[in-house]
Image (tube, rainbow, N blue to C red):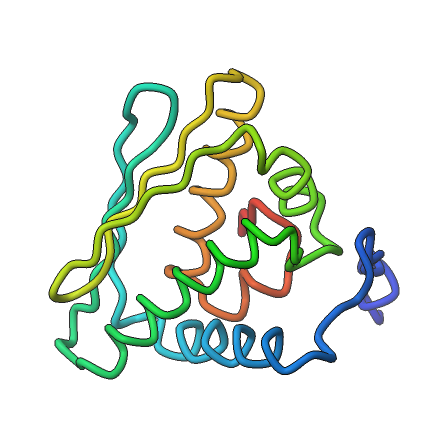
Length: 154
């Protein structure tokens, strides 16, 4: 039986994107991280009004550390500029819809990055938590998780 006919078709809610050079560059970094997901370690902890994550490159590859850091900064720029990503994924659409209620702070580490996301709105905090689960899935499963709506559960 052909189960592909049961797959949900992606519906782009904020335009398909991907045609401009910056989007393509951001996507290339993301794909490199997905390809090498087994070299990435991520830990999360709850903080007041949100979450703090520490993501590290376990292989010690300095180029991959730079890719991770550049990716995180690129996502902050996209977030600040309302330049949506994964606009077919309802979680990311919601995240971008509530971007004005979310604080985004980061700290560069020698082997990765520490990020704090927070909000005074308890409903937005739930979105932040789901986003955190999604990024953990990307690191654990790579492209398998990235092809599915968030949060991915095998």
